[in-house]
Image (cartoon, rainbow, N blue to C red; front, side):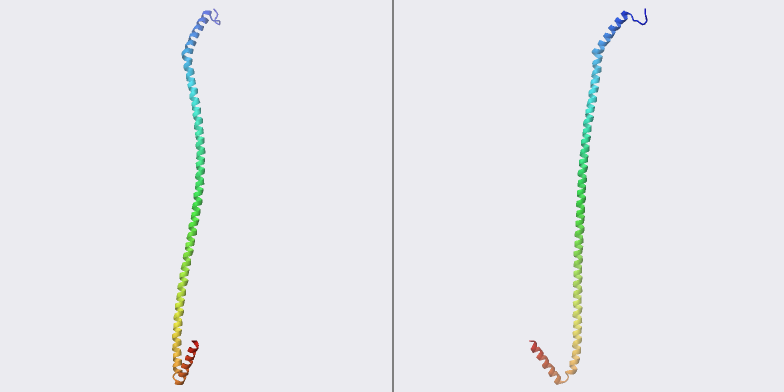
Length: 165
C-alpha cells in the first residue's frame, strides 16, 4: 500500500459519494443559491434603476428650482422697479402739490400786501385831502373874507365847471 496512490475502491466510493452529493446539491441547493443570487441581482438592478430615477427626479427638481428662482428674481426686479417708479411718482406729486401750495400762499400774501398797501394809500390820500381842505379852508377863509375876491373866485369856478361839461 502506497500512501500517495489511493486504492481503486476508495476512488470508486468517493466518486459515488461525490455524485450523490452533487446530485442533492444540484437538485436542492443550486436552485436555491441561484434563485437567491438572481433575487439579489434583481434587487440590485431595481435599486440602480430607482437610484437613476431618483437622480433624474433630483435633476428635474434642480431645474425646476432654478426656474422658480429665476422667475422669483425677475418678479423681484419688476416689483423693485415698480416700487421705485411709484416712489418717484409720489415724490414728484408731493413736490408739485408743495409748489402749488407755496404759489397759493405767495399769491395770498401778495394779495394781502396789495390790499394793505391800497388801504394805507387810501388812508394817506384821505389824510392829505383832509389836511389840504383844512389848509385851503384857512387860505380861502382869509382871502374870501373880502366880498369882491369871493365873487371872482366863484365865477372862476363856475367857468371851469362849465368848460368841463
